[in-house]
View 1: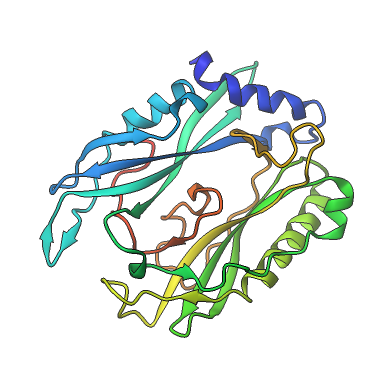
View 2: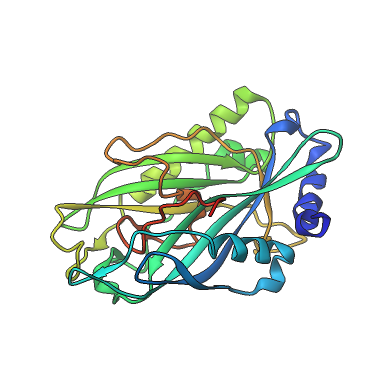
Length: 278
């Protein structure tokens, strides 16, 4: 287990000394891969992309995935074998007396068997990007904002909510609330201007609107690391605010979306198991 969590512990140590509330710190990574789901909803095979980046954590995720159960994937009303992309969030948290715990907190899936017209796609490759808020930028604070969007049939954003804002640095709670609000407002201001190509084929095409999730990163370039984003990221998780129109809030694990990806609700197989259990 020590090898499994060593990389995450190393990331935590760098900021623990400066933390005003160490108990709130987490270190996590999104592990990308793929699965093949059989006609009865069991997992036939699973593969982790670049497993060497995660060490034994990759094996932990692979073993968990092989025990998952899914709602059978249907094509024309009949269950089929389906391959899907997989994105799994693993979190490491500091416990007492120098101990750490690693757990799977969420997973999202994309349908690799479907053509892009079955899901939402960005209509403009040159999307409006958010402006970094002045106060947290001056303080050297970065963040990830997990945004959920409701897109109408014209491809425009009808509603948007910042489900969660994770800060890259701990600090006084009054400042943390201010920074989270600033990051959320900046992310939503940009996201509301985006346009999308809506599904025109498949089961989602008949809907009147669609829900999509996307992580928006605010990252200050480090002279040491440049623009490279580390595999393991340490942060203080913010409170979760579900979108009012989502029927199963929290079910789709918005923070388990691949870096820079757009996740359309209703694509990919539906996981019936808890992500950390078979």
